[in-house]
Image 1 (cartoon, one colour):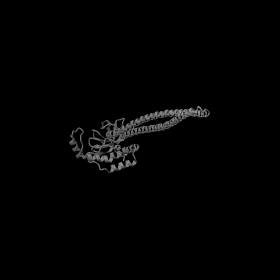
Image 2: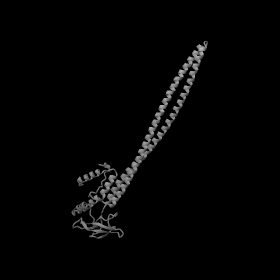
Image 3: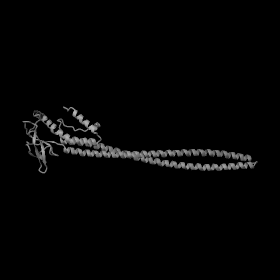
Image 4: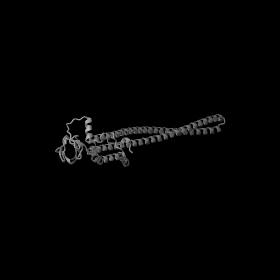
Length: 333
């Protein structure tokens, strides 16, 4: 079953009858709620897109930082190469000093000490060179890792931007669906039939003035009219240019053998007593069962089913709702 907050129902009055204006009002309230949800979805998608842009900018900054680190690592490698060349030059001098010490006996001690000192310096220089090479390698590794992290951050930013664009598209689709639902609801309200009254006695196949009907608005063939004698006719046709309507050739007597005048003034209790005496409620219920309910099923129900399917519902959920409604016991309140 669909979520409870999306289960739409018309709420009739205490007499189980719902007028056209009430159908229109309740439908407009439902559509406005859907529109509000669509607006909220659009606001959320815009916020997600803003976050994605910030993430992308952060990734670009990280990429720039990693490029600088790589440049520093390359510079360190060049310094190591220069230091190694210097050490190699020192080694050649040491070999030359050793050769000279063999040919100069008097200076042999001094030459040996000088050679040892030079050797020690060369070892220290070699150790320093090795340390610099290790540092350079570590810097290169760090630069490579920073580049990898920047690339991952950029990929995440692009993914977030894609998700934001998808959310924006979904919000636009939801807003379009809400507008379509509103249009169909208005069409359903325009197609719904209404019960109207008139302050005169009605006759079979009689002609009445449209301006005398209450309530006014969207008067059409198929609406029903109740006159002051309690007889209910169906409007067979409407002549808009002449401002008249033609009644049906048959009628339903809501108040058998009883007539009344529109100028009477009765209290609420007296009105209820009068309706009970003439079985007005039973007559209205009989008419609703034979005429109005069937027309609701024929016109409104297909439109509501289409709205449910367009907004993510399934045919199985619709069938379950129908079966549940058929098995429910009508309220006696």
